[in-house]
Image (tube, rainbow, N blue to C red; front, side, top):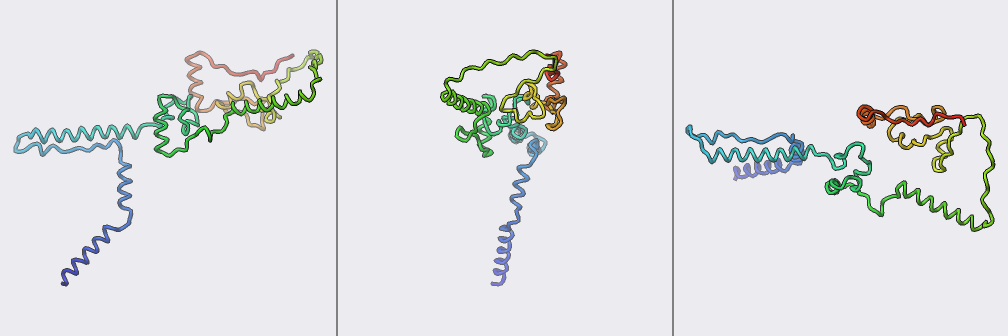
Length: 250
């Protein structure tokens, strides 16, 4: 009976050792997933040579295994090097919302974008959760403004059009155009150029508290637009630059 007890004890110890939760299986699985995609499995063909003769069946089987491993390796490498759908678009056409809105990528990449978002559980944008765009907000503000103006006109129907008084020309610098009410608060100590929104997205502007010649001017282009600008200056001959900040005498 004693040897049986020892044997049972050894089996119990083996079970405890096998059921240990040291995370070894998780580490092995993680190492397997992090394996280089270019690593290919090969099989020796020494079994195909027996007594100096070639076993055609074994040789072909070994080559079949290697060809299959090569195809799997190519598939892994292609999958490992593939970019996301919104990253396959040229830099000048990329949009920040393309990572969660499939309609921001070209049609040929929308199915791939939807599939990738579903795999990554990316919170997508729906028509109910979508916030009004800048153009839509502007239209809503215009509608509300027109409604308010219509109410005022109904309250004072006798108010006619007032002609502007004569303003004789003087020998002085022309004043900059009156900015829109939407951006007027942001132009108290400076004035935006007509192309301010275009340059603000593609160039480093003057600091808000340090305008140059009372204008918000672009100083240097950003890294993303340097290469296209340089290419355009070489291939197309010239690059247009806004110089409307130079005042003229009226």
